[in-house]
Image 1 (tube, rainbow, N blue to C red):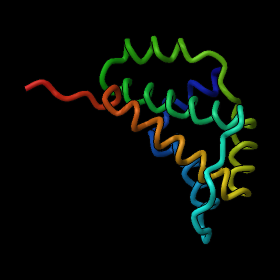
Image 2 (cartoon, one colour; image 1 turned 30 degrees about the vertical axis):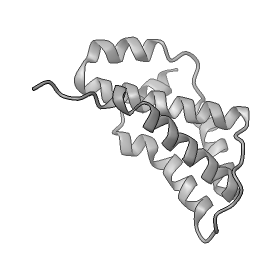
Image 3 (tube, one colour; image 1 turned 135 degrees about the horizontal axis):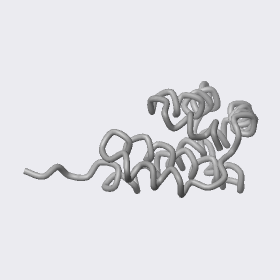
Image 4 (cartoon, rainbow, N blue to C red; image 1 turned 135 degrees about the vertical axis):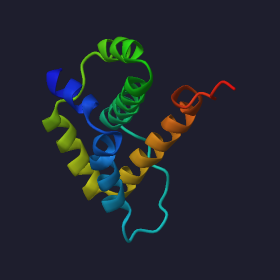
Length: 120
């Protein structure tokens, strides 16, 4: 859990970089393919990444809320598990693209929570 908390402290781009690179590597030179359903590990990877992004954004607005969110994260993938999953995604373009699409959809669904309208 300590390594996961340290990852939360990193800038968002650095947190997302492995997932972005895996998606880019998976999509490079490939045409549009059939939609692939995510397996359990890929779904969890997307959910964890979205939650870590939310915690990171909250840290800049309200550290108390961020601390509560961080405490509610539960068990996260270790760095080694995450790297193994990302390496597999980089080797399979359809799966890598599906994970990137799912992460995009998750962040779009959370947009109102992540970026609430400012008060006048």
